Image 1 (tube, rainbow, N blue to C red):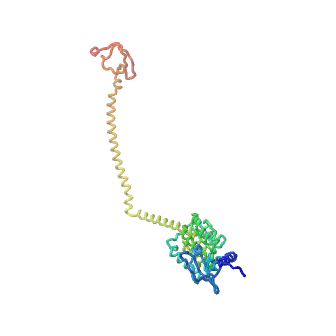
Image 2 (cartoon, one colour; image 1 turned 30 degrees about the horizontal axis):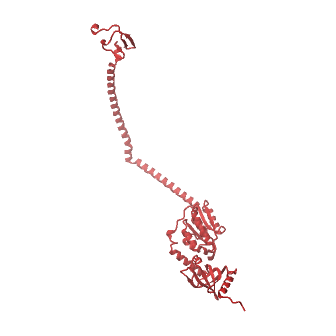
Image 3 (tube, rainbow, N blue to C red; image 1 turned 180 degrees about the horizontal axis):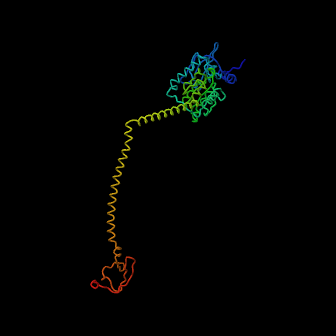
Length: 404
């Protein structure tokens, strides 16, 4: 007889078997969603995954569910990845979903439309949020595969149009769900560096599944938060992604992105030369017009009167100069006469003139003697003559009466 065990032990044993099976620990299933329940309190998703014959219960916990860029719906065909286990309490065999992707055009379009509507309502596509691209960027940031065709297309256009450009490459994987975090990180790092004048997120063409990563909500929000102008260049012209709507500019191809971001220097030089030529022609026309106007003005009667005006002024100036010269000459003559009179008067009062007539100046101890009564016999005197001087001693003093 078989050993008797409890229900709990059975469920625990089966759970252990399932969780230790190498195939069941990381498995991908394709099926259609049914009985979908969004548990708003916990944020968990509960649903069944079925095909034409069977179904299996599935649960997607909030930590994984909130990373989805769309809301699953009943009837949607999807591919889920996760692990198989047993809900021990109920003995329910189910898959614990870690990632979920739309499968088929209808499901993918529904997921795309849901996310597009959600982000549009939040204003991530608003025109007023779009930033203008720099006219002549010095450094272009690139978020793309370093081995893909997209980067070669961009380099080819650059060599032809704008060879002085510099690039700052943030190499990433551009396909598969695991590529989204790397693309988000690359955008943020280039933006934070402050070195890039513009950022191009590029990928060459591919199927819709190949390009699906660029519909990831995380990439869209990273592009919206980017302060550096960002250009989306995903796939071919007919391919549209959520990133295209969020980016500041959508380019139909990587090559077109390079042409939109970088000016054609040859065309710029041609425009500059045209501007230079136009300015030069305008200047020559203006100068020629001025010469013509000047010739016309010279021939005009009014100009003759103007031309005679300086001669009239010159004649008047000469006459005034002559009058002024005569007045100055007369004034100088009067001043010379007065000066001669005062010079003659000063000459007559000059003591040296008196000495020239035979008189002398007598000094006693530096005092000029005018009266003989101030002299005594034996006084030393200094006598100044017209020419020279002498010292002497008084031997006899005479009064005026004696002299007379």
